[in-house]
Length: 254
Length: 334
Figure 1 (cartoon, rainbow over the protein chains, first blue to last red):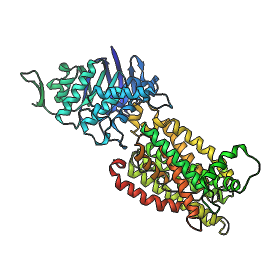
Figure 2 (cartoon, one colour; figure 1 turned 180 degrees about the horizontal axis):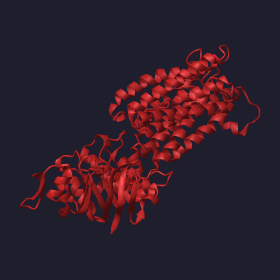
Figure 3 (cartoon, each protein chain N blue to C red; figure 1 turned 180 degrees about the vertical axis):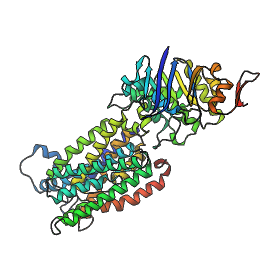
């Protein structure tokens, strides 16, 4: 079932178009990996999908309804955002941060109730970080903070989750942990879109790949799109994709 | 649960400070007598004695005024801190107090009634905060701490210069002493009808902050994150700025410019109940009120002359703030 769809989408700020002609379709229970060099507009695309900035032209649809016709709260009940883990200005505890994911389900004047705290705890449990609940979110490791932000997106109880470079600046163990988590979440029925600078992650975690380069946008199943030729062109250096005897894919200089 | 207990204790503290403060002065009244008189008052037995006269026409208006001034400044400070995502902003650092002061000083110069002074103060405060935000945004993206503070200093200095100009223009025998004393902050001249004119305005300004407390807290995560979580950021920001500026300006109109409270009290409250805005706001309101009632009592009874409030809050608040920062660097300055 298609949950998120863009048709002939052009993205950018004001009158400056950054990319155009984007046709993307994301189904429930799948992981879509967005690849592209620095500065081609991956974050701009995500901001457009989340309606943080308006599209320059074209359509974004969530579950068959145009994004431009939905109010902020309805959008936030459908699509959640996991930003790059940055340290908050105020030393919120992890559970406080995750409960904020419940905002779209609260009345305008309300605060979280017991059920909201339970939903937040359940999200922490699901990611195996329930023991961090009372810790200061500005004093935990980058990997733990990233998991906490994913937990916040889960507490938001949306069907689509957009993650901006969820594995950036994480050590190897945390990277694997986050990728495993993403896979598990997709299997539970969520539609996940994530961006990454590690093409190999796409082979590990994604069902489909979208590549966004200068003047080029392509999307399709991982193995069909992630060819040596396509990646070389995308990043502007000669790259080769090889498969090891154990079946893993390795991307490196040709 | 823990928050509820702390809030209850703060409410008791506020009540106790208010009762004791009402008894202190040249005519001493014991706390028990104060309570008796207040409880008797609704049934008004007609023959007001000396205690009633002192209490209801002099002491209580001033205590109530001090409470609302402290609550308003602390609430505005907490709201600005969440809004600008910065634990170091406050009405005085953003120049709102000075801007509101300028509006009010012009009102005094023109011999306008309290309500008109409040309106002018609100206009001055609002113009200042909009000027600061616009300047900060033009110089470098909003949310930059340093630029915001610098813009506040610049706009505050402009407002301060204009205040000096008003002082030059004012009648040196009649208006100038009033303006000077008022710029230092004082509740000496507060009368019951001033309080009656201010309290409803403060309540109207506090109401949206209290009702929207959860969303204001989410706003502190930054615009994009708050939007993605379902908050209408632009609309909320306008409401918060208008409400916080309204309460700052309305109390500046009766108390004059009082610094430090809006910066220091939210920090003290944060140490008690943590950074979550929905818990912080009620704690800051209660603590701000208790603090101001205490300080004002000191101002009118510690020496034979009335000590200006702004002087006292600076003398108490400055060192206390430095001590707070030094003791809790990690908790207050992430």
